[in-house]
Amino acid sequence: MGEGADVLEITDLPQADQDAIATTLINLVSGFRERDAEKLVGIYSHDADWVNAFGTVQKGGPAIVEYLRGLFADGNFNAGTVKGPPETSFRVLTPEVVVVSAHLVVEGQLLVGGGTMADRNNFSIRVLQRQADGSWLIVSEMYNDANQQETYAAGS
Image (spheres, helix red, strand yellow):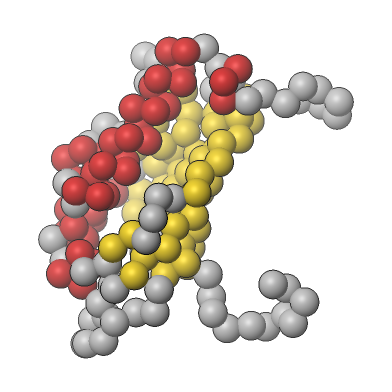
């Protein structure tokens, strides 16, 4: 879209697309909340890229889900709980590509070797793309924890 073009909102997409996007995101959220990687099967594209807040990189839906199976079985990860619902926003780039941003706070996550992490101020971004069959899959997902150290005094 060029300058002056109308901005598409998520509600401007056909209802079938809105429903498919919701299905993918509901499966993502419930899979993480319930620590059930099976709910994540089929929500990532075969060539999706994924980076967590600690710099772990996975490529492709099967590898992402396999990594998350292990993560969901880990006691340190499972000790963390989400403080309140995530703040989420949508940006429609084209009728076939949507960016979903989220912010949440995780408390109580344990560290390897002992101790508890400070509350994680977690931001994430995911790119969903409409597929030929009408489904919407995550093609890119990245998580980031806000760094508590300050390097730029005017930056906050």
